[in-house]
Amino acid sequence: MIVGLAVGVGVAVLLSAVSMIMISDLNHKIASILTHESDEHLEVGAPGIAKNEFYIFTQELNADEEKIGVPVAVYSLTEIVVHKGDTVNIHFFNAAKEKDDRHTFTMQPPYEMDHDLEGGEDTTFSFKADTVGTFTYFCTYDLPSMVGQLVVLP
Image (cartoon, rainbow, N blue to C red; front, side):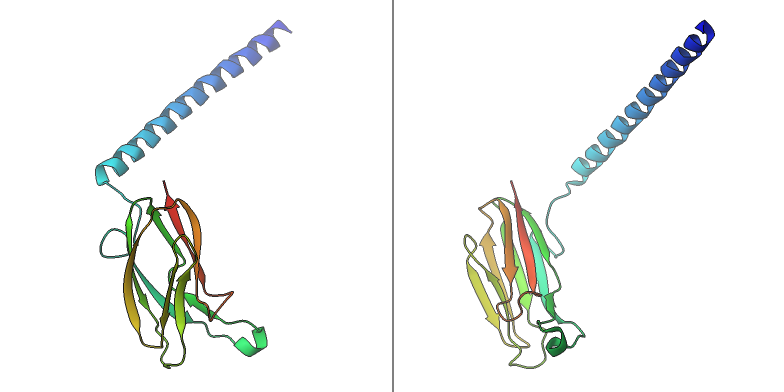
């Protein structure tokens, strides 16, 4: 019985030591990653040429809208992530070939906007991300399929 207790205590000590080594190694790896990210000056934003510059294209999916019963258009970019205080630059392209195939980039308050484009048109606009949270952008013509979200981090 004493031998079994001694073996059990020995195994527990060994497992504790292994766990401590693994935790130490994990902490070292996390610190290394954070240092690397800090050194690289990685920032939220993208994909664009400049910080917080976004290109959004309309896309028509290959589906039978009449059979499905809802529009089947989508945005090429469905999530924009920035920090509070950032200026956001969006290049919005309606890639539809027919002029009467309209699409919008619409947001409700606090980022109230409604950019309505004919097929083949594009526009560029900017706004300041001054309210933290998650906000939906959408096409008024193609709900519920054509939606995305703006995420403003602190």
